[in-house]
Amino acid sequence: MRIDILSLFPNMFQATLGESIIGKAQDNGFLDINVTDFRQYTTDKHNHVDDAPFGGGAGMLLQAQPIFDAMAAVEEQTKGQYSKGRVILMDPAGRKFDQAYAKELAQEDHLTFICGHYEGYDERIRQLVTDEASLGDYVLTGGELAAMVMIDATVRFVPGVLGNMSSPMGDSFSNGLLEYPQYTRPADFRGMKVPEVLTSGNHQKIKEWRMRESLRRTLHRRPDLLENAKLSREQQIMLEDIKLDEDPTVPD
Ligand SMILES: C[S@@+](CC[C@H](N)C(=O)[O-])C[C@H]1O[C@@H](n2cnc3c(N)ncnc32)[C@H](O)[C@@H]1O
Image 1 (tube, protein in one colour):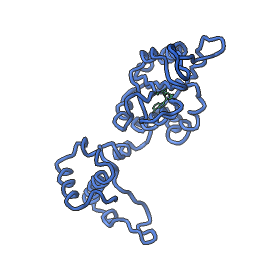
Image 2 (spheres, rainbow, N blue to C red; image 1 turned 45 degrees about the vertical axis):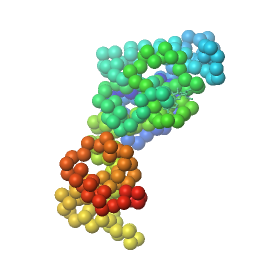
Image 3 (cartoon, helix red, strand yellow; image 1 turned 90 degrees about the vertical axis):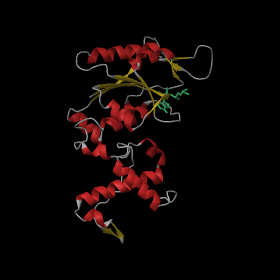
Image 4 (cartoon, rainbow, N blue to C red; image 1 turned 180 degrees about the vertical axis):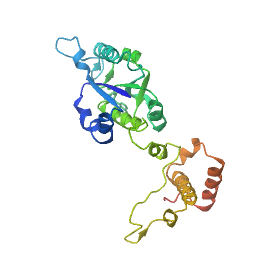
């Protein structure tokens, strides 16, 4: 997958995207991440990329010209090798990012993120994009952190990035539920014992326990997720059983 990022602060991406799993995925050729400083494309003689809003008001807006020209340069660089893919404008007014959105973006071969700053964008910049995305209902100083979070969550679904493709599928939210509790050695840590079933070697029982705990944790912590989760008949029966057994207001 190729990822382009248009930002006024390219150095912000180095530490996050150059290290660990994402850094390795780039070294191994699964990801090709390119950051473009769109200030390079301004035609303003003082290198400005922003200006005051027409009609007045506080703050400055990013102008259309540098971003249109930076996008044209990305299109030129990727022509014939990658599709245009999805062009995502980071914007608190956009579609809220979640695991399903990450999976959807991971199907593309090319993503371009446009990171805003200051008070926002000249409205005409929206003509360049396929998506407007928000990290959540709060306002950041710029789109960089939001883009990095989206990229991190998305590339976990790109084949080869994690090495073991079963892991993102078992993660919280991937099947509409929270993940079950997990343990590693030792089986008894200062008197806190691992549930016996996990050391029993009975794979069917372990599978059932994990399913039950996943449902139980979701019921206790995020009952809203259960409203949209597509549960199998077996899961529905298990959930009813948990509800009869337990008081969901008691934290697990
Ligand atoms: C200070 S914000 C501008 C906020 C804008 N005046 C508004 O009220 O919607 C500057 C930039 O940060 C980015 N940004 C801020 N909050 C964000 C969020 N929750 N999700 C995604 N991007 C965000 C966007 O790129 C935005 O253009």
